[in-house]
Every structure is written in C-alpha cells, then in structure tokens.
Image (cartoon, rainbow, N blue to C red; front, top):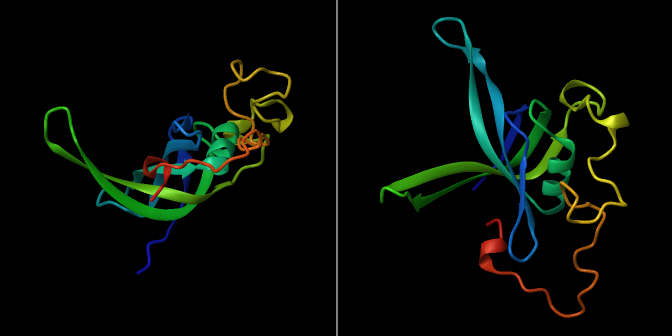
Length: 156
C-alpha cells in the first residue's frame, strides 16, 4: 500500500500553531493548489487542501510561513470523522505532512515584511511574550524520567 502526497501551493492564511497537553507542537494550514487543467470555460480551478504538521516542522512552519507563502508539502492523506453539533457525522480529509519546504527566498513574496529574514522570535523575550516557541529550545532537557505520550498526541 502506498499513501504519498506531494503538493505545491500558497497558504490561504497564517498557520495555526498549537500544543497538545503533553507539549507536542502541531500546526494546521490550508494550501491553495492550482489544478493543471482548465474547466469548460477555460479557467484554472483551485483546490484548498487542509494540512497538518507536527513537532519541530510545525514550529518552523509557523515561524517562517504566512498567508500567501509558497510552500511544498510532502506527506500522506488521512481521513477521519466526528459527530457534528447537529448530531450528523462529519467526514474529514487532510494531508499529514512529513516535510514542509519553504519555496521562496526569505526577503521576497509574502515574507518581505520580515526584517532581513530573521525569525519572528527573539531570544531575550520571555515565553509569555513570544508569538511562537523557539525551535532551538529542548522541551525534554529538564526531565530525567520517561516521557509520557498519550495516543491523542500521536499523528497516526
């Protein structure tokens, strides 16, 4: 069985970075991907594909990409379902990314407003002042015992 996806498109809004109760980073974003063919009216159509990325890749995605950024995503399709507020079953499809590639130079396109391409965090800020977590910070450095991971924290 093979389940591999490769996409290139632009983010429709800034990535949404969150953390699981155990501290695992997860970023969600939607990628607008143009179809390679035109419809009957000669117009190109676009698919809007929900993507999820975990851990350090999630933090990097949130720190360096924003609405309009060109990105390449490699991963797998994952389906799921849940019960909506109206009691009906809602089915979902998303790409769980193994890799997110930043396809534009730091100082061009959507990222042009960042100062000299520097990350959106600064080392002298306290964690409560930061927009995102520093990617060079080791979340496991203070613990000496085993790491607890629940099934909800796993991307599969």
